[in-house]
Image (tube, rainbow over all chains, first blue to last red):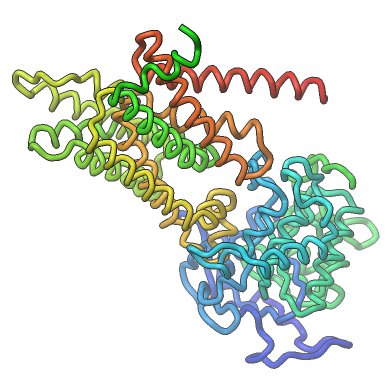
Amino acid sequence: MNERVAPSVIEGRTPFSRSEGRAVTISSVSAGYGDRAAISDITLDLARGSLTAIFGPNGGGKSTLLKCIAGLMKPWSGTIEVLGAAVGVHAARVAYVPQAEQVDWSFPIAVDEVVAMGRTPRIGPLGRAGAADRAAVAEALERVDMAGLADRQIGELSGGQRRRVFIARAIAADAEIYLLDEPVTGVDPVTQEKIMNILDAEAARGKTVVATTHDLACAAQRFHDVVALSERVVAHGPAQLVLDREVLEKTYGGHLVPLADGGVVLLDDPHHSHGSHEGHE
Amino acid sequence: MNPIDLLLEPLAYDFFVRALVASALVGVACAVVGSFVVLKGMSFIGDAVSHAAFPGIVIAYMLGLPIILGGAVAAIGTALGIGALTRRSGLRADSIIGVLFAGMFALGVALFSSIPNYVGDLFHFLFGDVLGISLSDMIALSALVVALLLVIRALWKELLFATFDPLGAGAAGLPVRRLDDLLLILIAVTIVISLQAVGIVLVVAMITTPAATAQMLVKRFGQMILVAALIGVTAAVAGLYLSYALDLASGAAIVLFETALFLVVLLFTSLRGRRAA
């Protein structure tokens, strides 16, 4: 009812048929913690090779939706298909990048060790990394422009480098779907640009990239599609087609301040407005 | 007496050689398992599981069963119980650990006090007696340590992934919960095979201290396990010689050596850190 249907064909982009081109198909999914729903009745298709930002207020269910797709949370109801099968069937082709603050950066582990984790499901238990695995790690580090930092302990890296290590892990895994929780939160604009260039390149070679973000400007400018999420999907589609005053009002509710000229301004989430930016690279 | 003689003299005694081999093996096993324990922040679980082995040991004694078997059943049961209750009860893990830790130990003490005319030595369960280890115990211990290290060698990548990034590991399809349970079982087994060497009260130090010391010295996880194992072996050998030379309790001597090494490394790294800053 308060859901807007996104245009399925966008100028200049190949339309996908509903059955073939979908990486993720979410049907009527609700999920939450305890007895509090975080997302309700989510129906959403994500095309292969798409670059999608999920944005919305704190507590709007962004991370919950990402965790359901990743198989880290079980929906209360509804179904999710990933690469044409139930969640978990193709888990080795799904890479999840946790929020930077959920990672223990003092862990005694080097950059190449983290990236090599991406190979774990492929190698399987008992097996050891071989030449192909080492090549995949080296190539992934090359792709995120960190080849010279393979031996660094992860805590010695800048904020942007820390995120790029985890993206390199997804690349080394040869995953089809990258799920990133807040990959550009708390980094400066130059670093953000660098990360988005990498994600853009990954989408261009057919990877499906889904990221949660608080940064509406980044979502609107750097992603192909946006999902406005406030427990329910308010809108889904290219930012320039679906983002308008009505959508923002429905998504953010009281955080929008109307302006005299008829526009609106979004007050930053209090949780994130004071966050200091991590070091510039 | 010159230093070489001081090193060689105790080797003439079979009991000392057996103790040396047993302590070194225990040192390696504790340090390797301890590396995962320290990085997962599970040291307190180690302490709980070792105390929880006590009632199992007493019951096995009362029934005339192998003591190590009784200890293993109680330790593994408690370790998995902590894991299951933490997931289901909604209580914080440290509350559950605190409850089970003291509860199981109290059960052991109560059972122990009910044994009429018990002549065995409680002291040995609590503080270890590696110098009294028999040949058959030493062989059993060696087999268990080898089995433990083989399991970790086989699942090393998976255990590391699940320890470092449980969300990423889960999304990639690794059975994170079963790996967590496996780690709890490995902790319990390590503790049980270490009891003879250092006893219930001190085993947590054998698990925590070498790994924590190694963490301050290295940048890679592969190095951490190697350095921790090296510290574990060194401390076992040095502690045993100290115990022989100064007539100290062997478990306490090993743990004191590890603690001293930890403090030295802590001092060294914090001084180095201050200079660099």
